[in-house]
Length: 102
Image 1 (cartoon, one colour):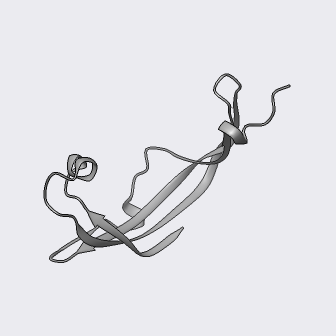
Image 2 (cartoon, rainbow, N blue to C red; image 1 turned 180 degrees about the horizontal axis):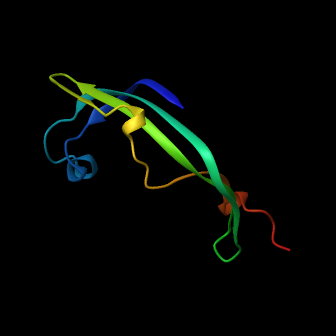
């Protein structure tokens, strides 16, 4: 997945992002490339009590990214230096999209 020049805002803190009680946010942009590879395990989940069903694949993954705003830039290490703790891709249905019971 490639994302190029995604418009964001930097709120500086989570509290400020929720309450808007601090510094004014500034415009920012982000770029990143994520890759999933080496599928390790495929599995399904069905939880009728919580109206949730899904098919998933546990994989390896890597990411490289950068973010910029006026006067500041952050760039990650190259993708081959990233170290994913876990990566899961999947398709889920829940709530009103949950398959009919029975």
